Length: 141
Image (cartoon, rainbow, N blue to C red; front, side, top):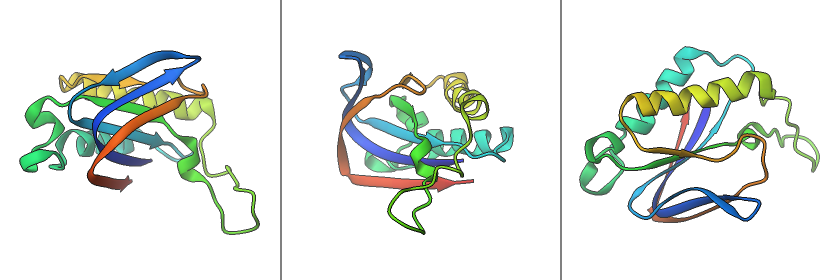
């Protein structure tokens, strides 16, 4: 799995003109992608990093200050652009593999008591946020 964690001052996800998730305080926007070989162990690592990385103000974590998180499925994290001008998506897991893994990340964060919003898997989403810092962390399993 891959996750791009971006510290944000506020964020929202809109689908078909309707806001499906948002926060108006410091939190994390987590763009999460899955590949074919990902497992429960990969999910656990991503959940732990999102919850525990000390990347918020005063070196606090999401879990320390009960900060909100929005998880957005992002298959394009597995784009291969080594050849030509058209990315290959072969590294990204198909929906039947990826969606349960992304759902497990959301569930794992919720089990830790974290306020989690999401996008809609497979939908065209408008993700809007103000990167705070800017702080952007890439986590790979």
